[in-house]
Image (cartoon, rainbow, N blue to C red; front, side):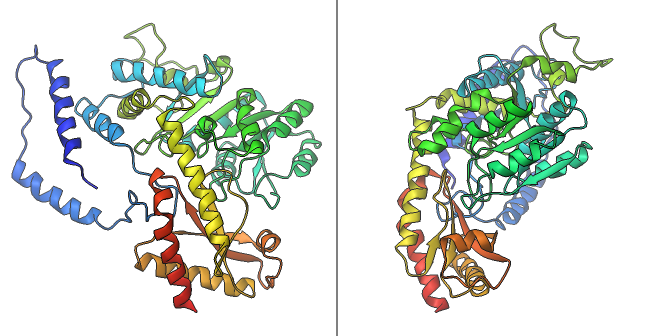
Length: 448
């Protein structure tokens, strides 16, 4: 977990940083080292009460440790503690953020998008839907029933009507249901989820864009989870078609603190048309006077934002460029292959049944049983037993119809089925599938 080399690199970076302030008079803030040491030991002990998110046997929620380069750059920048709202609060880190936005935009085929980092995907989606509401005032937002719950909640916060769209058995939005809502004439924005957080499904973006053009609606791509996978080479053809169309959407959200190797919180919102910046325009009596250049606070609903997030992201993207065929893309491919391999191993077992074919690196599976209630009970038992064996999974509640389509012999004696879900977002997961599967089989044998 702890690599001493990281601490040495941090110390070297801090020494270089300090050279930039050598001309100032010496000033050392008062600091009681002994008192701080006692508190930090208490904090470290309290922090042991966490799941081992960094370890390959954590195969539950979408929690991924930041890369060492991001940790070190983030920590180093905290000695300055820049604020990327106005340039006088974060000169260097604001410049780094703007360069990051250019690089992220190019990943989607956009040369000059308007965008900035946010505290996470929720805030990024809020800004995207807020702009959508300004362009289509009073009009409805529609999103998948498997989309993140943030969309319905944000629509409520913004006072915009919202309608959920049912999904097909593959977890993607039903196109006929989308068109039915569009025909009502009051839909302003379709949210296409590029990797929904429950099932990892990628909505059918080419067809959604066709419908949006036909009915004059905007398309917002919530790619918070799956936004980087366009760089991968192991996508299914239908999934690849969705990524190839991202250049045509109106706005995109991606979370670098998921697959982008960053600490929390680091989200990002991008707009294809920079003209939407007009909606952010505001006056301030005390900021934006240090430079005629664009201040990031002038295109953001958030005010103070950690410049450290931009420093860490820039360092990571500099070390691992966002390009096809590079090291970063190779890691994404490894996770995709791990998900496909895991599904095959599950379906070769007498105790488990994988459901939809994974489009990204999320695998959803049920525990074999004669009926829905028993399958759910066994899934919860496996979840608890596996944790005691240091394998950490996630539970997911699924409509019984969806599960029944993959397990037709299952007696549908309940409306929902509790299944298991594994997010294989660490490259190391591929080499640990044998160990993970062995623990799963042990758990199933214990249940009987």
